[in-house]
Each structure stands twice: as C-alpha cells, then as structure tokens.
Length: 88
Image (cartoon, rainbow, N blue to C red; front, side):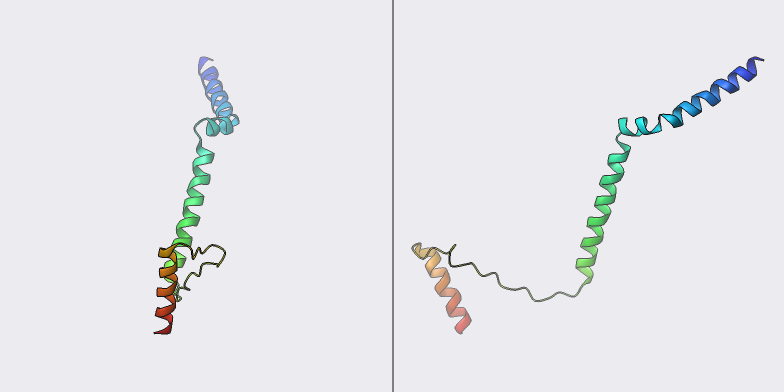
C-alpha cells in the first residue's frame, strides 16, 4: 500500500507543479524573457530587411530658416558654402 501513496504523492506534486506553472514562470521572469526575445527578433528582421533593400539616394537635410541663426558667423559661412556648392 505504501507504493500507492508514493505514486499518489508524485502525481499530486506534478499536478500542483503544472497548476502553479504560471506563478513559477512569473517568478523566474520567463514570460518577460520571451517577450524581449520576440522584440529582438523583430528588430533583427527589420535590420536585415533594410540591408537587403537597394540603397536609395539620401536626401540632404535642410534646416528650416527658423532654426538658422545668421547672426552667428560660423552658421552664416556654412550657409554660404552650401549655396556655393549647389551653384558649382
């Protein structure tokens, strides 16, 4: 009869283990690790997709006039150089 109690105890432990699986996964942060791994995979796919697409010519960034201070000589010289480059 003692073997029946041992089997019953083992089955009970297994049932409790599966019943508390979610708590166990939360404690060991398994669910969070899976979320982070899926996010990493998504970002890696995005990087691979960007690298496999043919490169398109990059548009030159143009600063708005509101942000450009022509009172600063270095900024003014930079703007003049860019205009001269576009002419030539």
